[in-house]
Length: 184
Image (tube, one colour):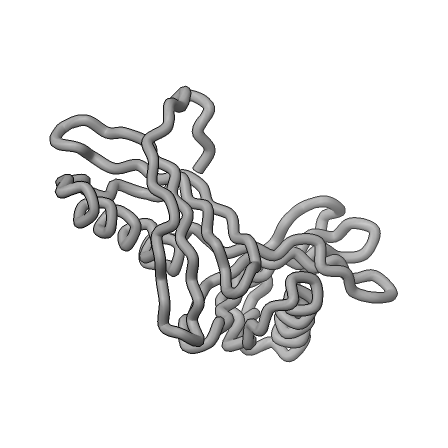
């Protein structure tokens, strides 16, 4: 009986089977969270690996989707770790997945705007987001919301201080954007 051998293609990205239970992938995810904490002076706590992919380059790039806690709030993050003789964190950012923390914060911002302005905006989706570490986190979110039948794009800043159980919308404003230039 012939045995099948899988060979990683240089530059190709492949799924890491059993990533959630892999000691190696969990160690890389923990490394990513620790490095992010050092870089941003944050206090994220690793929870679990969701999935991972790998790319053979001069070494291996690992693309890890993981869950970490900021206080009591669980968030999903994407980390890119390059492993050769040592490890280097190349990227670390919150995901934009539906139902994730970014989605939740965008919905919160729309609800707060509706209360402040007696408006009736309906959340449609997140276009992009980034995070800044301050005393807590400030999330800069570009989102789409409906005002009646019209879809508009808005930018909002939401300040989260989880240890105080605090979320505050600092800014919410409509923006003009070329819909062809929007990346999701």
